[in-house]
Amino acid sequence: MVKQLADLDLRDKRVLVRVDFNVPLDEHRQVTSDARIRAAVPTIRAILEAGGRPILMSHLGRPKGKVVESMRLRPAGARLGELLGVPVRYCDTCIGPAAVEASRALQADEVLLVENLRFHPEETDGDPAFAKSLAELGDVYVDDAFGAAHRAHASVSGVPDYLPSAAGLLLAAEIRAFDRLLDEPARPVVAILGGAKVSDKLPVI
Image (cartoon, rainbow, N blue to C red; front, top):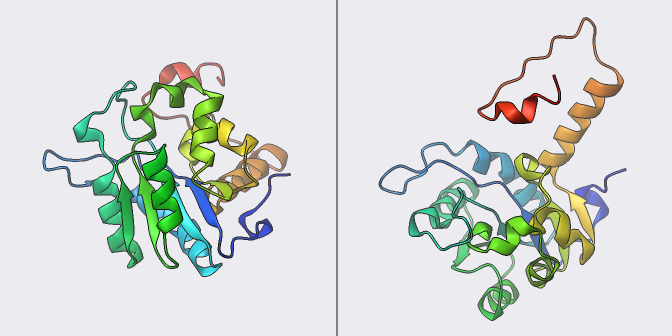
């Protein structure tokens, strides 16, 4: 059974959270749909209320392992701050001394968002050393990125090797929904498949 957020002791802990802030931006780098950011808010609030200090990491777009200025996460952090009503700090890297120092300097009732994971090719390669570097940012790990949960990327499948881990509220809710559909589906059943990546759906069909 997947560990839940409530199973972790979060008080005074740096809580490294994998979120999905892969949101669309316009030509002025403004978030045009904040649905994914809003979806992460309950987990972030729960961590703050439990006395934890959330350190958020995400990808945005497909920069192919290089720094792409238009794919920085700062706009997502700004929108999150508006939704939460608490300070959201931003670090322009996701590993190394600067990121570790930013995570340690975080105060109660503050949130830290680190830079786009995919600026590093090691993220999509699932590199264990990169995962270990990410793990240095937290004391515990929470996965709340349902949209990326199937990927064998360092931030998803690698970091849990180094930190106590649990599912965030969003991911746990999606898992429960799948369990209900698979174990006790209301019949008759109609399956509606959508999305741009048809190749991902063909094996299911």
